[in-house]
Each structure stands twice: as C-alpha cells, then as structure tokens.
Image (cartoon, rainbow, N blue to C red; front, side):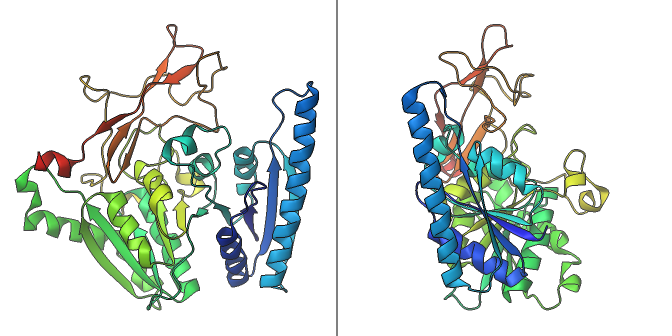
Length: 381
C-alpha cells in the first residue's frame, strides 16, 4: 500500500487529476504509479482491427510519457513508476486497486447514463468495485477558500463511518477543517418537518462523530444538518471544498447496488474532487460490530428504492447483478457494468429497470428511463 495509482487516459489526459495525484503522493510520501490500459480489439482477425490496436498502443505510450514528464516538472523528486497494460481500463484499475492506497482518475464528463452503460466508461465501474478509496477529479480542488475544508457526507450508515475515518485523516494531512454534513430530504408530510425531526438528525450526526474528535484533536470538526436533496446539497458544499468524501453506499437502494445513488449523482455534479470510500475488506459482506454500533439502523434520510410503477417495493430478481453471455439486441450485465435499479439526481429520481429474457437465464436488457418527481416537487403540485 505504498503507492498511489493514477489512471492515464490516452484520449484526453485529465491534468487536474494528474496534479491532484502527484501532490497527494508528495504529501503521503508514496510512489505515484501511472498506468495506461489498452483495451482489446473486438475482432483480432480483421486487418483494420489490428491497425486500430497498434494505433491505440502508440497513443498510450505517448500519453503515459507525457504524463510522466509533467509529473517530473511539477515535483522533481517524486518517485514514479509507469506501466502499460493490455485490458479493459476499468478492469485493469480494479485489479490493481487491491495493492495501492488510492486510485485517482479524471472524468470525461460522459453524463449519467453513458458513464454507467458505455463500454469505455471507467469512473462508475471503478468507483463501484475498487478495493481502496477512489478519487474522481472532475474539477480542481478549491485551495483559495479559507479555512481549507474537507467535506464528508454522513447518514449514519456503516459506509459513511468509513468515509468519516478517511476524511479526518485527509483533513489532518491537509491541515484543513472537517465539515460533516447530514442532508435531511424534505418530506411531503408536514409533521415530519418539525423541530423534533431536526433535533433527531442533529443527535444522529453527533453520534456518528462521537469519539473521533479525541482521535484527531488537531482537526476542527463542524457539524451541519442541511435540508433538501442529498445530491443537490452536497454538490453545493463542493463549491468551496478541497474534496468531498462519501461512503460507497448509504442506506438507500437495493443491496445489489454496489454504488449508492447519491454517489452516482455527485460524480456527475460535484465541483471538487470526489473521494468514494469502501468499507474495510473484512466488513463488506456482513458488517462489523465496531461499525454497526455506530450505525443507526432505525433512521434513514437516503432516497429509498423505487420499484417499477404500480408494483410496489420488491426484491431484486435472482438474475440481478449476474454475468450472462450477451445476445443480439440485449445488453449483458457484465462484471464491469452491473446495472443499478435506481439512481437519483437533483432533478428527480431516474428508474432503470433490468429485464431478463423469457427464460430469465441468458441476458438482460434495460427499459427506457422514467423520471419520477422529487418529494419537493410532489409537495408543490
């Protein structure tokens, strides 16, 4: 775990991601490993496919050389290593993530749906599956804001506890304060919006942070409960932050979803680097008592799962998140592109449904996206 891994995009290298990774490696005293992956050709027999693969390799070599030169200009004494690997970029980075402290990538701003379903997408599958924290640098950090601030999203879940632990360590490293934010969505029921509800969220936020101040006495910690949609409110906090730290999954969505809907939205809308933190390896399947004691299972302010219209809540079908051989006209649910049931953003909840074929044994497809009004919109109508 003595390296930071930077994914180099041969098509368009993200300079903010490279700068962030290099500076973080200097702060932590780690080696910066630059990796570029060359995806395999779909048809290795055809001449044009071979030529295309050769062009990709040439472009990859040039991209990683340019990235290494830029790193040396920024930090001459930084230890670096470079590597070109054949394979699907998301899969390559996921495999290497097991042995590094952080993985850093830029964002090509593909948009929500292409980032999830595109064959060339890296951010969504990497963030959902990597064994270490993943830093997505869509926009540079805000270093001119005083005092420097690291924001962490808290919702009482085990996943957010992992985020709190990472955020405090990062804030100490950056000599920054930590702003812990609990977002309380507005309810269509008036009696849920009283002072008692606000006091309860403040209590849960305080419980989620209990004990951490003693372990990090040099980090100033502020606690704040915001009203609104989690993606909107956390994206607003990112406007003046060094980074935004969130857990991989909170309380919303099906257990089959590896990446929470709030994280999906923030990867698309945050205005600073987003750091997604997984649970420690030994605690991902069943949880761990040390985390469970700090998690409040009775209360959640995360968006809940949205079932297909008219059917009510139901468990994901048995074929969900499995790998099937692709068939013409169908989109396979591969290991790198698991299909989420539900995603949310500031302008509503978008429902994605994966449907099997008639025998439910070969492949799955996605039905058109349906936009559902947010609670705030429902209250106004």
